[in-house]
Length: 363
Image (cartoon, rainbow, N blue to C red; front, side):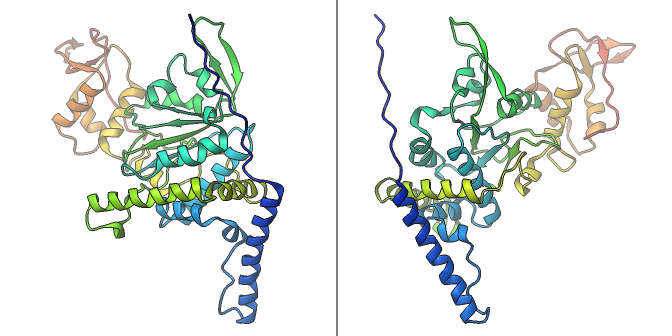
């Protein structure tokens, strides 16, 4: 009684050799025109157009301006990453762009109008965190791109569960009712979130690149509602330019040229101010620091006192703040005593076996 559906579609040729040559000649023409202007004006005009800029389609430049308005270097990092992912099916990128934005800034538009057509609809898997770390998630990784939506992790343990998915060459693939096996992986990972702090990241992390938070452009309106409405209208025009006015072909040719000629390869996530703002170090939010400490340094059966944790963190966390974090992380209040010392909180719901006294912070 099983029903099978044939979802195969013949590959779509994005552009021909003639298309690519015409695209390249047009870019060279603009590039040389700028050089001529610079020479004729004795250096007073022109001279600031790179071949990359001359070849970049206006439709792609528009998206870069929307997402990275004040950081052209971040636009270059993301576009370089994307060009490598689209061009090389056997290249394993071991770091992840984490794009944080206001709601409705075009993340889904990028996936559906650019990434799926270029990589193949079946080669782009959209998942949430729970599905990514699920026992049977391995099959989804046998694709070109895994998009993790609405990322929000609150513990260092959740960070660790993502580590192998991002950077390991081999992952375990387990399908229900079938023999499990190890498979070599080549997929890239892209994360989206509407949270300012979507991940708890240790100080020396090399897996996540986090550009500035993407907000609605201020000149789109006098308040959030107007800016959101104008952003939606602009993205509608952008989508039309990509799907109906030849924009997708231009993007495909540009990404191919970039990957073959100019894209910078990063073996680990580039540094960024956005990452510095949320990374787990001495300047981060004290509550996040406490969460990391509880998950990394304590175990089931350990017991702690609120006052000891306050001294360890070295920040003005109230009793209520510490208790809220402890409760969120699965700790329970009790009155067990060990060696004559009264306990306040234990981990894992077990009877306290030992008193944990925090030492000087190493964070």
